[in-house]
Every structure is written in C-alpha cells, then in structure tokens.
Image: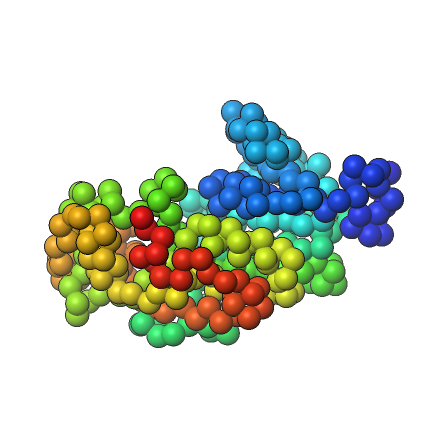
Length: 304
C-alpha cells in the first residue's frame, strides 16, 4: 500500500515521479498539460466523451463529478500536486465543488501543492485604483462571492493539514487568446455591441491563456503557502480603449460609445456586471515570486 508518510512514499517505480492532478481540464488545463515534462498528468472529467481526447494528450483521465462527492474518493493521495481550475456552480454564494474536492483530498496523504484558479472579481469595484493582493476582498456579485468561498475552502484545507500543503490562489482577470473559443473581441465587434463613454468607462485587465498556463505551472512549484497572486499582463486599459484597439487590429469599425444610464437600459445584466467594476491589478508578486516573464506583456501582443 502507498505510504501515508511522504507524498511519494514506498510506491512502485512507475509512481515515483511527480503526479499532477488537474481539476477542470478545459482550455487552460490542456495548455498546462501540454508543457509537462517528466510528470505524470491526471485529469478529472465528468464527460466520458473527453476520455479519448485526454489520452491523446498523454493525460490519464479519471471519471468523476465535483457535484457527486462519492465519485471523488479515488482522488485521495493520488497526486503530489493539484491544479484546481473548475468553476463554481452558477447559483448560490458558496462553492460546494471546492468543498467536495478538499474533503476528498483530506482522506489520505496531501499533495505538496494545491493551486486554485480564482478571479480578480473577488476585489469588487475599486474605482480604478491600483490593486495588490494585500487589498481586502470585497465581492459585489454572487459569482465573485462563490470564488471567495472557494479561496477560503482551500485556505482552510491547508490549515487543517498544518500547512503541509502549499496553497496558492491565482486571481485571474479576462483570459484571451486567438486559439481559445471566444478568446478575442472579434465577434463582439462584429455585433456592434456598444461600450461606455469616456466619463463612465472602467479599467479592465487581461492575461493571455498561454501566460496563464505558465503561471499555473510555476505556482505548482514556486508558489508560497497561503498566497494570493494576481496573474495579469502589463497593459492597463480602459474597456472602450481596448475594443477600439482591437477594432484597429482587425480592420473593423470601432464600437459606439454610450452613457452608463443608456447601458442600463440597453444591455443585459451580465454585460453590465463587467462594466460596473474598475481596477488596475498590480502583478509584482507574480513576477518576483513566480518569476514569470510574460510572453505577451501587452494585450495587443497576443490578439492576432
């Protein structure tokens, strides 16, 4: 039987290399899996149709569902490092999926590191201020509240394990990449969706999917325990300026600008939610602690 004393324990030779378990192996998780060397990669999936795809990537698929905790029992003691990228449910103010995962991992030897992909939305509206990880969270939407709950769950898990697990929380803004589904603003520009006028506009933050994958990888090995890290590029743009820049890159018309009052009449609640918060993320910790050198430091570097 595997030892419960060390992460690698007295295991057969084929298990002695590091084992990475990816929870939520979507676009970013696949990018992380592709860069692994000398690491056995496993991924939890609730979709049996993805088994062949994952195996084709050299990933061992594990059928399970975060909404069905009994299917997660086999995850205990399985991996030396865990990357948790699965989103919370679409309703409520808590994240029962992260609770189910941490309870499953509690059953046996903990991983050395657990990295959770959170959101910069946990800060709420900062009225355009510069925001470091030391700022208190202030989630304004149920979506952000669920992420704060998930962060608290993984922190609690580390405390229960006497900090034997190094837990990192990556606070992620808008993810983009031309090879990512919905990963560029082209479709929105083609629809002619309006943006806010200068007086009402908000600051927005971005990260290229490949840089995010590299940040996840580095956090698995370099992340400090109980540490939140902003993962964003160096561009600090107002949202309308971002769409104007993208329109110029694609040779498309710039979107019309409207007042916030008109937007509240013409736009959906989801669209408005992204226009109601303004902040500029500080990424110093990402660069100093994870030592990530951005391949796409400005958003225009990676849009085409």
